[in-house]
Amino acid sequence: MLHSIETSGKTIDQALEKALKELATRKEDVDIEVLSESHPGFRGIFGGKMVRIRVSRRDGRAPVADAGTSDVIRTIIAEVLGFMGVDHTITIEESDDTTFVNITSEGLDGLLIGRRGETLASIQHVVNRVFTSRTGRHSKITVDVGGYIRRKHRLLVEKAQKVAERVRKTQKEYDFEPLKASERRIIHLAVADYDDVTTYTIGDGLLRKVVISPKTSATDDLPRD
Image 1 (cartoon, one colour):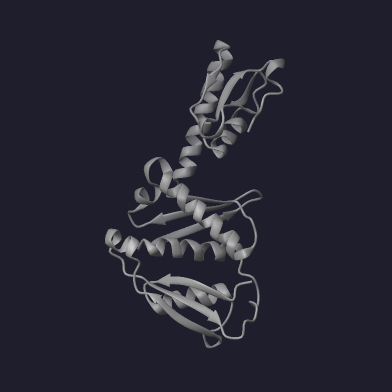
Image 2: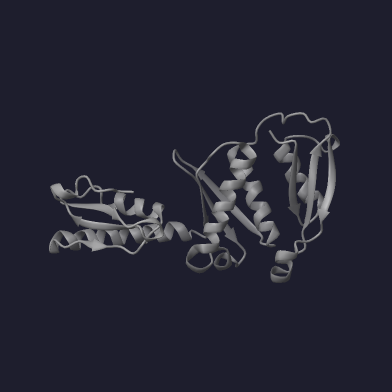
């Protein structure tokens, strides 16, 4: 349960509103400490002035109720992108195995995605870590920007299916480039319905990749992760 929280906004009132929502309490029941009026790590790049505050309960009471998963995620992303001075909107979809968050920015999608999605991967890592820290719950949160991840996944499915057809005709294996675990899973699922083609995984660590192969008794027990 949270008894204090640090939030940021373009004004103290904006930052306070976020904190009160996260703590599920009222303005008259908290103490407010202004920590800074800008973030030097990003101000020079984005030029956005931000106010960061710490809000603490006066009586140490637990929150009236836990904030919903979506509200917590919205607050975390607002803080992360607030440091960067990025105006944004988000949509959140929850499914059985993940909470999918899509961020739309005002002309800064490319910046948030970064080279080969590296910045986006860092944002997703921070959001997951902070969510677990604040709620005590582990939730798989997938963060997307401007539909980049979904487009990439769709293209990966299309490529996997084309390769599967080629393997079926040539009876020759095909090795993909090293991929993240989530991307390997997409390929495994894309080929799962083929009767005469299968997938397995080779390599270690960052070099782990998927092979699409003709299905034989020798491929039945090969790893698929």
